[in-house]
Picture 1 (cartoon, rainbow, N blue to C red):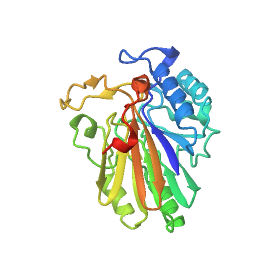
Picture 2 (picture 1 turned 90 degrees about the vertical axis):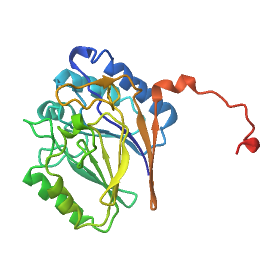
Picture 3 (picture 1 turned 120 degrees about the horizontal axis):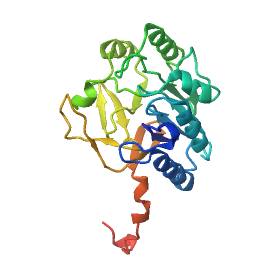
Length: 268
């Protein structure tokens, strides 16, 4: 299975710029790159913060752009999104369940769970009891299949104070639930605008940079947020029985690709 993972597109109302950047242009460039180089992927997933203030016209623009993709796409929301406005434009897309942007997908003997971590009144995330019960039911139903989770907020500390301050509230309850199932293989998340790979309690995980703006790694001041101009990425994810492999691609730098002029039999 091949997946393209992007996150935190942060489209804004009336096609405005955001943090001295153009989120629509950068997302269009990502779509162009994916159509040109990754059209054999099974699907694309965006793990939340689709619209910076949740405006309806931002979701209209997002749908117009994503409908240009040559592959299917799936969406979940993040803390910046409006669930109501999102469902007006994308409610028909993914078979969302129980009024949340959550749904299961079983494909190629793999169980994929797309989760909704948004709380209306918080920038940090978590699950209501209703959502916990839905997730556990999905895990029980497909306990014989390897399971992969897609969510906005990472359900663990990432050791970046800015982002941990608006992280996932229900870590222990979440991991207590997962501990009853040994089939969760990987967690894909967004929110942090950083490239992060690692593992937690035996489960591997990965994130991608935003398609618009990044969080500065050196920004650790609780009272002030700093962004950076690092390049946006999407991840090319390949999953098989034995491996989850993620390769981050800085798609705005594709014009910098050049031949090495070294014969392959001379490479070491």
